Amino acid sequence: DAKTTQPPSMDCAEGRAANLPCNHSTISGNEYVYWYRQIHSQGPQYIIHGLKNNETNEMASLIITEDRKSSTLILPHATLRDTAVYYCIVRVSAAGNKLTFGGGTRVLVKP
Amino acid sequence: NAGVTQTPKFRILKIGQSMTLQCAQDMNHNYMYWYRQDPGMGLKLIYYSVGAGITDKGEVPNGYNVSRSTTEDFPLRLELAAPSQTSVYFCASRAGQVGNQPQHFGDGTRLSIL
Image 1 (spheres, rainbow over the protein chains, first blue to last red):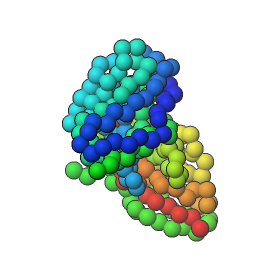
Image 2: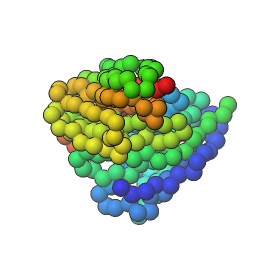
Image 3: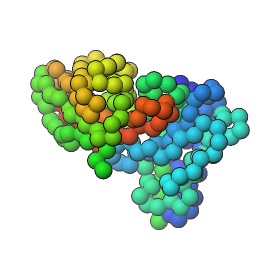
């Protein structure tokens, strides 16, 4: 699986958009980009995933660069409940589909 | 909609005791996983299963055993508890029909071994 690099932490103002970057320069053509988050003491929560195209759901948007070497998760209107550790994971679509969680980005949403 | 249910939520064991962590999902998912998360660290895969009767080792399987007799249940067994197994354990499942489907996690079992 391709290695990912994320900033260790970032702050965001409540009500503003939060843009979380992720570098995955060694990604290969059949690897998907997944985003999960983990709110303190809870299990990881799936947010969104994509292969090439930008994706949007009720929680967030995922922007993947044309060369696929980086991506950005966008939380359009951050709330205090979005305070969590956000994980960017690159994984090939295959049997098992094991996820490797790195350090993630600790996001603190401030009033 | 229950999703992935883990029991118990908390447990304290003495060194050398054994226990089974329960995991059940009601989404008819083929794939199930067990992870552990040590304080301040990411998740590490212990075991996984691609369907009833089929299991395989992950990154850190030593000291654990699993079985998968039904689609719904995937229990994790600790035979001789050791302090190094103090951790939070998460179970996850995903549908197997399409390879890129995401995993869905339970709320975890917090295990302390003293």
